[in-house]
Image (tube, rainbow, N blue to C red; front, top):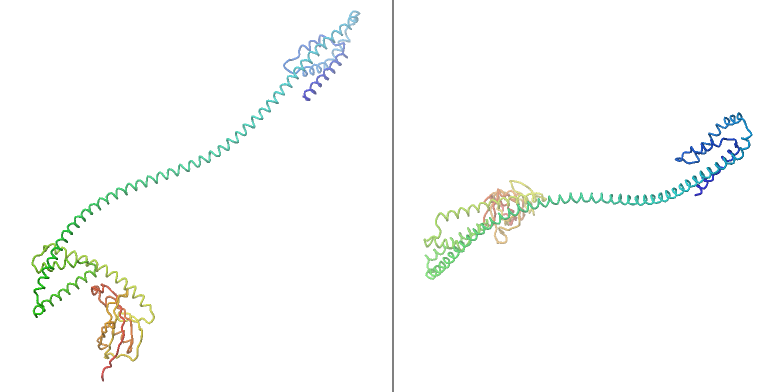
Length: 435
């Protein structure tokens, strides 16, 4: 408002100065002043029109003064001159007063407009701040939205992977279910067959039990008839015992080789042979024997491979022991050297303990109270060589590989095929050859 007051005072001062200047030039033509005022442009501020008028008068004053000096002054002109000037001045003041009012009106309008503009500016500033805050919030929201979109994309990718994995697992499960169904069907069929076989075995066992019971009853009856006091009966009984021992040894050998044999069924077969009424035909018997032989060969092959493997490991370990010597295909280690050298023709009395690599004792002469005696040269090479390293009462451990021991056949039922044998030999005495 102070700025507008200064603006208002400045035009009024200019107006007064202009009025004084025009009053000083009282001789100026009033028509010119009125005409000039009537030519103002209302579309621009009035102060600009006044300034233009003052400039025009300054440039044309000298010409008008020159014209006035050339006019003839008559008596009537001089008489009417004061009234005319007064009238001219009153008109001019009236016009100036109207102009001032117009300027004041315009200035008031400008002040009101400026206040309105200031209010609008304040409102716009507030709106701009509000919009800026909304924009910042929207940017932050957009940033969060971008993070959410990234997370959503990652989750969607993971979801696709999980879906693919689920589909794969479902397919595998379906395939597995089908495979299991097939296996279950096959096992069910096998179970049915096994059940039928078991029923057949149960029937056969029932028959065997009946036959065996009958055999025992008959044997008991015959035993009551046999008089073992008689020499012929004693001889027959001894033959039966010998055959029985052979059969029992054969059965034990088969069992040691992994073939399980039912003793009751064996006794029934023997009884049927004596009776002359066989329960199985020849074709069935041959098939059974071939199957048993095949199973026996397979078991022997497995047992031999295992024995050879264990024997090699044992030999390698024994060879690393202090004092061990390898000669003539066997390993020997002196446990006690003894005294006095043994001649090749000297009789050497020894005791031996025979064991497997796992420590299983096959035979122990000393525990059984037995000795072995023969000239040194008569001993097998696997023993004569190690014995030459000893003196009287010496002892030595000899490890013999399977090819120089019992070979691939072994010695059933105790010694498996391919077994490495260990012998602990002690010289009990040496009998010098007489000269």
